[in-house]
Image 1: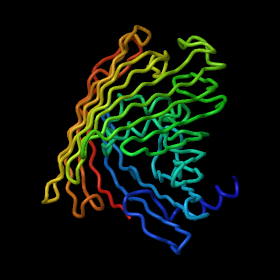
Image 2 (image 1 turned 30 degrees about the vertical axis):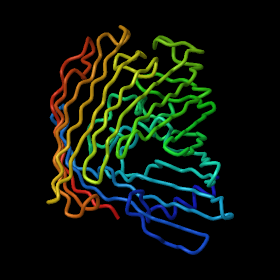
Image 3 (image 1 turned 180 degrees about the vertical axis):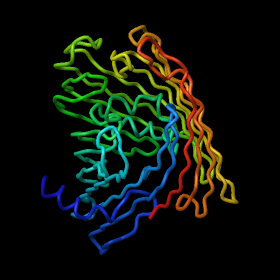
Image 4 (image 1 turned 60 degrees about the vertical axis):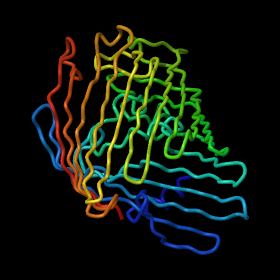
Length: 356
């Protein structure tokens, strides 16, 4: 595994996942593809600071090797490039986003293992379309590492199986023990027995619905955070998506137990609604709108809630390949001042992005 990581890491500056992948090598049985994107972004924050950064700049490398007429070996690695400080590093660095391998069979589906997109995201991505803001109410990006340990986002140490049955799509996932994980706000825990699945159905042309579920068991968790060893963390997600070449409209409804951590250092149960829509006009303009609302269904967070309205406008020189964009986030009720929560200041960002 270390050799595979090193090999992909050496090649990684030449790859990034997008719809514009191109071939580095291609013959009858073997495909080696590379793609990615470059971004420069200007961000403002609620504390009146601002910063230039590399946004979602990333690159990826994918391999597909035919074993026989029905079975392929597949592998992919993806890395992000960060030239400014973040929560993890105070210097420029590359961060691994995905690294998995597996098999894709015509009849039996796709089996992969490693660091991969979790089955919750099979439905979750429908509203995860903002350039900078959003994705704060459906439970996918929980904990300090944005859903890696929990298995809802880019799931770490996971095994997943996915298969299509006509208009139905099924996904199943498992994670073993994840030890001594820093979940944020001073909380550490071991997570075990991560298991869940997704089920999607094509209702009509362009219209799809789906449900997803995931759970973990806490072990060796920091005392005083509202959960104990043996307690379960659960996330339910259901959504509806309408998508054409130029239009996208989706809504996700999430409910969770012991899944989110408030800024007062307490796990809490939550109900959230997240929506996203855009329309791409023939002249290259694309207005967007993103809505996020999440509320504590109990009292452990002492009143925490999120509410954001996000307005965006993009201009595509080449559709979904070369664009400039801007987003404005109207924040409500998401700042902790040590005693309670107050409305946050608004934020905005501008960016230029190129997919290669």
